[in-house]
Amino acid sequence: MRLFAAVLPPPERLDELGHVVDRLHHLPGAHGLRWTSRPGWHLTLAFMGEVDDGLLPELRVRLARAAHRTPPFPLRLHGGGHFGRRALWTGVAGGLDELRLLAERADAAARRAGVPMEEHRRYQAHLTLARARADAVDLHPFLDGLAGFEGTRWEVGELALVRSNLPVSGVRGEQPRYERVDGWPLEGAG
Image 1 (tube, one colour):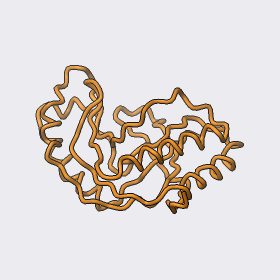
Image 2 (cartoon, one colour):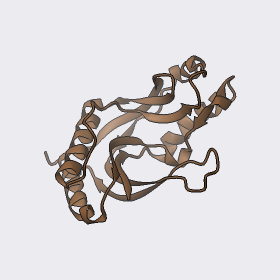
Image 3 (cartoon, rainbow, N blue to C red):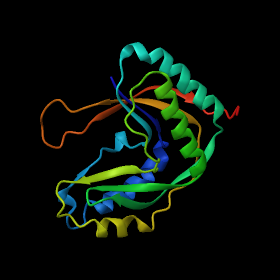
């Protein structure tokens, strides 16, 4: 199954972001973006790709250990950014050091469980909102629309394991579906 470790913001914080994104949908050029679905909004910590079922027991043990070692920390959704000319996202503020540490621990847990992870990259916290269908979309109006966004703070208290179910219908615009498979409380036992 196709898996990743994530932080799942609470529904109330996603609703705040949703109000801003609703306004973005009315901007010129919005039709040239493929918007992510709200039920799938998340902060990816470590993308694992296809994971053999035989590795799941050890992966769960190691992710539980990573969560056990990490204390809860504050975050809030904040502003916006982009990767190149293709991906539009909102960022986070607050306990960024703790979030990066949790991402590193989730990545290490997957590697130690035998998951063949891609090359290690420096973690950049973001929640993807849309992807451009072509380079011709000017992302600046959308970035301006996100610039003043300041979500309400929440306490991150769980490391989640999420399954990504890719579209299979072939219908244009169909989104992946994300399913929480497991989760472990952050306990901060160092």
